[in-house]
Image 1: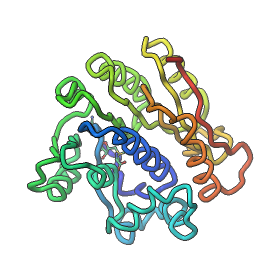
Image 2: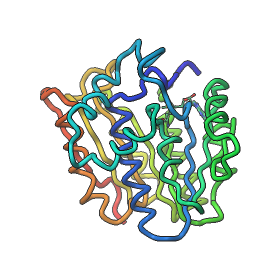
Image 3: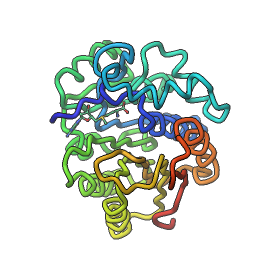
Image 4: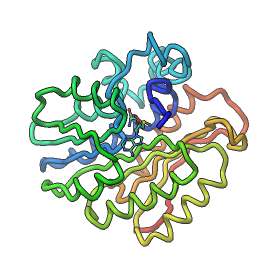
Length: 272
Ligand SMILES: C[S@@+](CC[C@H](N)C(=O)[O-])C[C@H]1O[C@@H](n2cnc3c(N)ncnc32)[C@H](O)[C@@H]1O
């Protein structure tokens, strides 16, 4: 486990994932019934972008800094959290900020330093459980939730080539236990071939009603570079396909550099 999210916090890929995360939670909270959110690969919870790893890579300067400097109105909801939460929020801090009194969050993380940070952030918080636990294994242990409504976020580091396959089996395992849940997984787009294989495996998994939201800064042909990223969503809330493309376009307009082959799109991978 070499991946440390602190180096990448605030990057364009983080902003894309968190913009959609906020949209998904808002959509689920349109109904008053409580929700459960499971963040299987949680990271440290929040990050100081001015010092340490984030400062060394400076990835956030091509991501959240551009959005904060010239905030696109379409991203107002997401950027409101960035402005008010103090330290730059990772997925756990963002989700926590959105919980209503009866909603719950469970975070899984394996790296001891990140678990330490998460436990400090959520000490004595009755709505948040922090597990030092394998996120894949937690899909069996923590699902289905008693609320029967909620969101799964799978956001692994993609350190090895098998991780696309792990995501497909993870989503399928979650779907078997929590078929009514909104199940989301982030993925990198370096070049097209692994993503094509990922979509084919999702289509062959037996799961229905799957969409993919993608943001690519340039044609994905350089396998050693993060050219773009996507979020697959199983059981997307009503209006996902209508409401999220403007968010992706606003992101592209601000974090992109008009490179050849850039695009933002939501496509359907499997019908309802
Ligand atoms: C991309 S980062 C998560 C970022 C976070 N979701 C966010 O948006 O702020 C992936 C995290 O997964 C953790 N990790 C790696 N393998 C894991 C596993 N099997 N179970 C749980 N966490 C894992 C890594 O330590 C890393 O912190």
